[in-house]
Image (cartoon, rainbow, N blue to C red; front, side, top):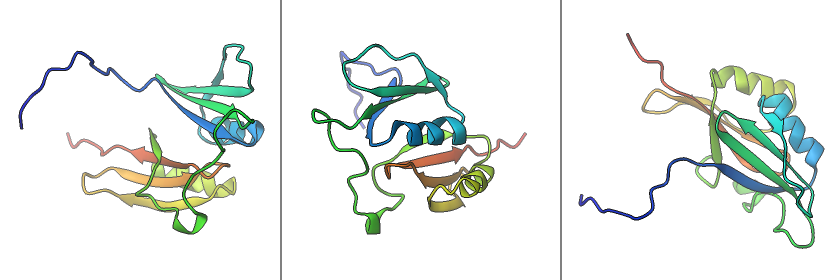
Length: 141
């Protein structure tokens, strides 16, 4: 593999933006279920919410005439884990799936171990976006 030098060097993901139909339902998912913190948002001319976990933010835009459509672009009968999704690191993916069930959040894939030892589960947010919750492998010391 040949190394190349780019004038651009990405440091980290700053945020992911999604378009939603119901800001309160999305707040319950990202704050009440996932434990993110709602943070201050600039005074845009359209409605939305921002949530933060660590250095990562999720920016929600309420669907309107000048936005894209809300929701996952994959047909309901073909929602899978190997499609467009975003992932968060959690302490316990199994407990996260249990809590999701308690809150009647659709689970796309029950917790399962990846070949590298991480455990992942996949949920649907209120607009059908697939959200992975991943527990990193425990290091053996």
